[in-house]
Length: 156
Image: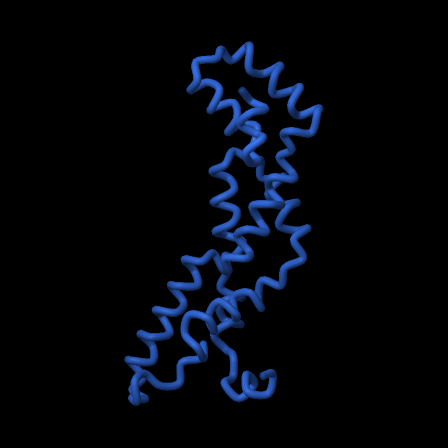
């Protein structure tokens, strides 16, 4: 049953254990099977964590959101940190690209033709909340929202 589950897609050790428990297997029967699957390479939490990190990066998520999502899969903090460190992602550029994709020009200089400070502040706060929800740190958000619109024209 464990191998059949793993044949379809990767799971963490904890996820497979939980699925087998749901199927009615006893815990003392499950652990040796999980050990055998792990020694055979069918279960590899490090590989699974790296796969999840790549998946989240492709969706434009930051490290905070990635850590939270992967922890829910039952992977250890060490495993998650190793996968994030090995990802070779520039989180500042990812945050900038996410802001550009969502808002066009990430720097708020005017809102619908108005240069009123309160409207600009509200729009900037909205963008900060969005990027925080995507899992980026304050430093990464500051970098992303400080993009000069003139710099974007030079890169295109």
